[in-house]
Length: 172
Image (cartoon, rainbow, N blue to C red):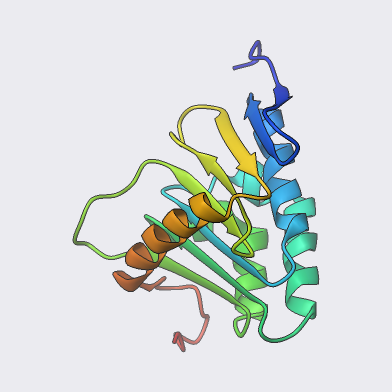
């Protein structure tokens, strides 16, 4: 991994392809910073290097400070692992539970291997294989966002609260 090339290439004015862990880390931060009202995130494993970074946490806090109807929904395969490895995200989700929901997939069904961040129904970041350091980010992709949002909603419907997220066990 130390020798992988980090690069971002323009495919259009609003669409970029990134490869390499540092390039993905940068694009995740940019995606979160560009959100104005809503973020929907699915990742089988919320990669701490990408999501538990200061820029992402600051962007989440700023988005939530905008008040209602701003909303962040984060969906993972295993919530216990997310709590252990993403302390900043977990802490923010606990403190701002009116704005940030962290849930995990239920036991039934397949677990997708990709990571998706849907930004305000306008743009997205898609890492087709969470194990490979390659992603696409597009800030003006209404058609693709519709399909990704629909898929996210289907996953969200079968999700459940993350046990242990709320200290007193008072999850929604």
